[in-house]
Length: 222
Length: 254
Image (cartoon, rainbow over all chains, first blue to last red; front, side):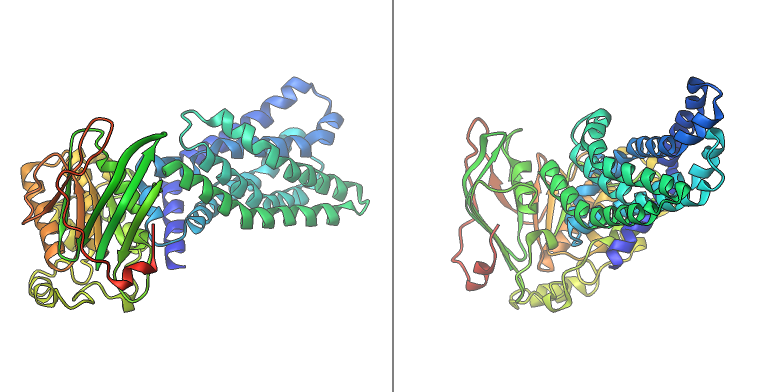
């Protein structure tokens, strides 16, 4: 447990000091959300109707950008090999690094959603539920992203490959995330079921992803 | 305590790199792996560390009463230094000191070896020098590798040799019985090579073990040498004698 926390703390410290991953992801998020209204024209009704979907899609794409870096640097400088021998099971190493990604990138992205929602004329009642659903989906984003990051370690410029591998896994999160937001706006009672499924997806990813990621890492450093 | 390989075969990319390799290494012994490029030195070290699986054969490490994986008892210093550019020198080492787990207490390698055969030398060396007994503090290890004056500098500003020394300092902050060193002297100057040789010598004479792949003589006191041949087949030219198997080593394999 001490090793796990040490690793999480180190990764958070590195994320804070290097700052590049979060900056890139937030910048990308902002650009996508800012440019879409320009392309769609000034129809405010249309914008507010599609706002939750756009925010979710942009969030997933932004998270994908940073997911590839979860293991990349530690692999490149040999730290991952030393970690594999450190005594902490590789599954927990993967979990610690995904957890650090969740705290340092996924949560800030989710919290940025309401600010970007202004650009899309997001329904005033949707701000709260938007943030809540994104926070509920954020663990799935980070932990599933860790699988992709681990699988593409040896692929130079593996960004597109990562997207191909991981976006299909993100689809359930996307569907139920958007469903939960629209359900709460329509008040047709579909919010709670969609939200609970979203939470379930997150919990399952938290449990299963580290196992898959550790398996991938073992293959890559072998 | 014994590291033992029996009829070890390792393939890489479908090509046999190590074939029928057998050797054994005991507490207080250092093994140098020599041979031309491509002879399989790195492959053997990575196999011992558990990164590669042998195609066949047995690899066993027996140390205390409880069987432990080799990976939990070895230090691995590979081609990369595992140094983070944006952390300071001291932070880098402090992280590894906290992260890498020492062997469990009842497995007490640190200090006298369980077999008792190295009691005297362990006490003699670990006492005054404090080399391989209890873990050295981060500051001590940095001092040892002449990095003390740089401890607050981000490691990204270090030279290649200084980064190497920082990577090697990891060996001292957590006591682990088996050191696996892959080309440890790369980019080290003469003085630093001397420091490394002293550290390995102290570790070994305190009852530890070291396996080092190298092209240069490390300056170790009485190392064993395992010469791996070049060409398509790696052949053992001079291997330490195979000792009879003690019962404890049957507890684990690979």
